[in-house]
Image (cartoon, rainbow, N blue to C red):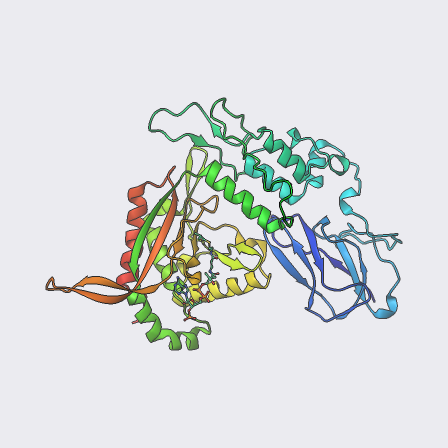
Length: 451
Ligand code: CO6
């Protein structure tokens, strides 16, 4: 008996997803829980396992096509059923589907519906990427000419619109008086009204710089969806939303290194997961955020939104990009809980098993490029947060230490630099430095409940 494979609901806010890859061809066998296809949503890329063991009878939605959640994307069943046709794509699992012959996989975006209003066209015909771009640049999509199928606004339309400088991102209110930061539109808020640019104050569009000259030997490769999202988010955060300021601290990690070496084995036995430096750093950062809640806040227009939970985003490098899963309510976890959550999220990020809710809602981000031998980094703030901390490589260095009698000596210590990038709209340098001082003290003297 054939079954329909439907596009799964990946999270409350996800309405549609794009097929990236089919892992089986029609006619091929697949085992239960083996990866059948890969999808991309606004939030994450994910591998979708096969719900049953069987034969892939039909693929109804091609690669690079976006369909609403609940759409039938394929049919699985017994090899004897090969060649029998199933329902048209776009039929939802909840609605009984009439089995009707379909000549070929249909592009569900082109399935016309009765409501051809502009709003509906924009809602249903623009890809998640385009809507994300519109949100980030504060662009009212109804102002963009759509050259795509049935007036759909394509990425190229958006690029052209932004290049023309028509984006309304931006600075609102009157010109800043001296010493005052201009107010920026809270571009993360989809409900925020589109704001008219103020003459003389609008952020100029990103200029197009020719990437190569005539006759130059090049290989052109389109950016992946994730790469485009990273690129847009970085430009948006650094150039349009947050005035970044940086501070760098040096931490003596000898205390943590000692604790880690001493308790590593017992920790792994009791929590069933490895103990790296990160859980100690996360614990110290949580203490810093509790002491200075503005570092755990967001800006919304003229309001400062103090987040009551500490949801720690941790940058995880992937072979194909970078993702920031979030440890929710990190302040309620002990060292073991933090280590477990971190290792679980990092592992699932690398095997494409995260769901969108696990990469949203972060209130502060830690990135650890130190694993690659970095001394320290000055990362770009992950919107709508207001600060991000980078962890540099922990290395043995000779440092001057002073004993209780005031005698100086040169000692070999485990040292680490750490950079904090913060949003000067609401975090001042003194607060940022005091925040880092709390973390420094914690890392250098706390025993983290281990002894
Ligand atoms: N120094 C020295 N040694 C380290 C460090 C640092 N900073 N961090 C981890 N380690 C050690 C760690 O303790 C492990 O040692 P052993 O247990 O003795 O084997 C080992 O390196 C491997 O660590 P692992 O990656 O397995 O675990 P960890 O918990 O430390 O980190 C992670 C988890 C998900 C954060 C990490 O795997 C990762 O993906 N890091 C990269 C994050 C990244 O790419 N960030 C963006 C970089 S770009 O931010 C950027 C500012 C710019 C430059």
